[in-house]
Length: 218
Image (cartoon, rainbow, N blue to C red; front, side, top):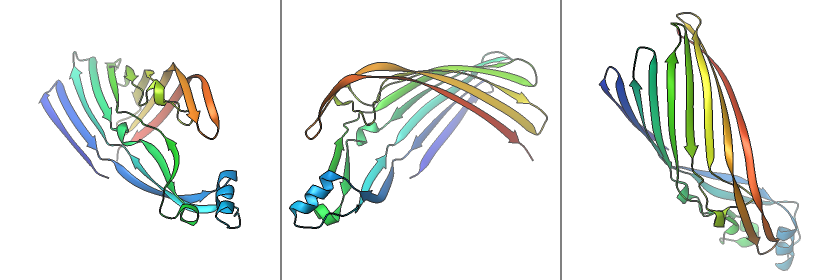
């Protein structure tokens, strides 16, 4: 894959930037096992195996983001960003298992994802010469509709609330810490599998993210 970015310093207090990251194609290798594959092997007159070697092509989506920074006062700055991810390229999972299916793919699951978007707004407050405080909020849309939501990856809309701080310990050493709480929206699920039957339910969940960082300048 590749990335392309640019930034425009409008004036000393305002700047805007753009970044694009291309899709990345992966080829995963491994093996499959289970009753379905054993029955397929037996139906072909072959002896069942402990595992069946195979591979799967998977494409990670392209993303694009535009962001801006605005220094309102000597102490307060605001920043915002808008992100797009090409999740519509993720429509299904297919494996290749030559010993069982030859050149025909083995359909693992239909996913039918859609492009998703994230809007974020944040603030930076220079509390002292050494201490900076940060906060932010973001809304991340689901990459899958209610119709196509599955148990495998139960995607849903998310609200991000973040706060953090940075401390200049010295001219060379900077310490940073951040905390994010993600509220995942409750969403319905109605998945039908021709082999396993139907599953109806609701997905929900919240996430905590905590990070610390130390930077040293030589």
